[in-house]
Image (tube, rainbow, N blue to C red; front, side, top):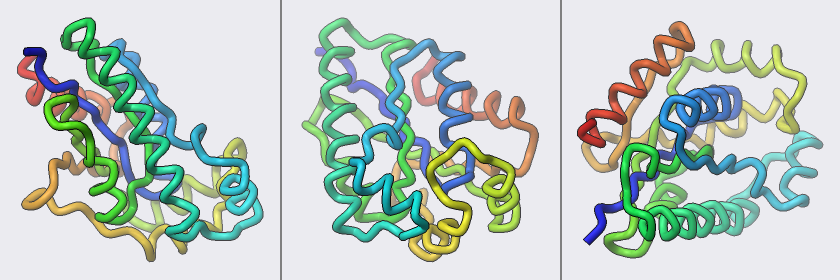
Length: 185
């Protein structure tokens, strides 16, 4: 029996660095990567680009698409056997516990979903949002996401909580160590 495929979902509000950290982790682990933003339907992207917050109804289909995509990738990885490069890194805001519950609802024995909460202060994330110009998410959307955010509780959820106020390389190194510990490598 092949071990469960580890799926690490980098989560947090817009501007917390999900894509940046995911790309650096993928480079370190040489593993599969799913950029959740690319799976948004056009209607969601249009709403967010116009500064209109998404509703739960807007998110369910997107979240299901993300989950279905990594379940399919996990099947492919499991068919080859799981090793250090067999992990899957996913980016998805996963703001509410019910969203994370949906993302954890995978076929038994196929994959193990762990959330990586990229935690920062409102002011830090707001400054990052203002500095970027290459993303569809309008900077004023942070307020809505901040209000929606239900921080994961490590007592009840498989989660790595990572403070993002430090140096990017140090943060990535810490995440590599945390993930490697879980992978026993």
